[in-house]
Length: 144
Image 1 (spheres, rainbow, N blue to C red):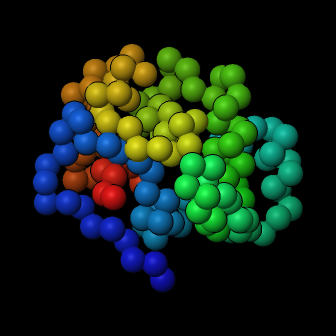
Image 2: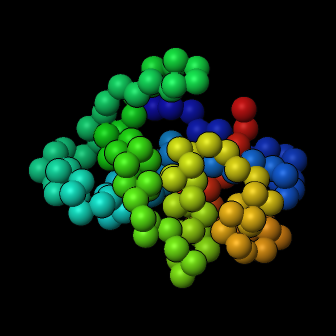
């Protein structure tokens, strides 16, 4: 089993980058895969309907050329479905909006300040929500 990164002892600030810690989410939430599949576009919901859960694919990071194994649903969600119009709108609940924005951004870490600017929501409210003791959907500070 992979090691889950622990929270840093440093309290996150508005400049602390956050990301979706998929490994934490897999361990802590048995329904993580169902939640991801529900976000797929209709075309990919149909495509993944008959495949076994956790189908892994090779993914190449275009910047570092690093090859990693990713969950097929997770990868499809990030590279296609999250890029579709209507995936994220101003009526999306805060935690879901943060989650969807991170997906649409390829799960590249983003600070609460930038999340606030891009979502048109108060950065301090975002920080209080995702930096508290409860972890929502694997939204955690990014530790390099």
